[in-house]
Image (tube, rainbow, N blue to C red; front, side):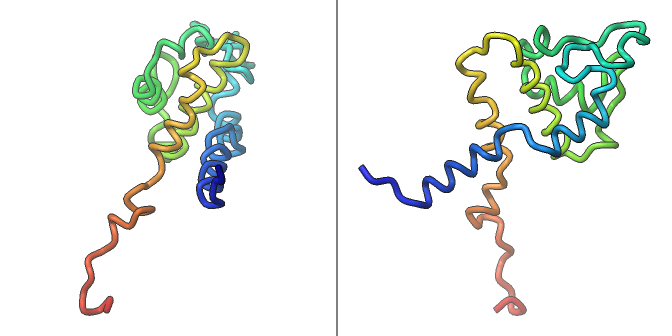
Length: 143
């Protein structure tokens, strides 16, 4: 069986876009690291000074849906500030994925969790643009 070049290219583009990236690490370091710590365990430099310890992602994130995590990031919760005005939607999605990645470090991962990043990457592609569904209607000026 021979697989063509284009399907392989698209497949590898999905894989490259689904892992941790520099933007995720940068935004996490700027906004989250001081409280949540480098591994998301709630052991950041400021965590000891807070009246309530930040959660350990390994213990809390697995039970949350993506929309629940996104809501906490955008609206805040308890002492955690809301990041929606400060972060663009793409950065909030990056933080959602970063929280998921950190929650998997050091624990057994359920089989379905291995595909979560692929699902998010697939759903974040502007398919209307890629497939040409959102092309503007032709006008006399465009002809």
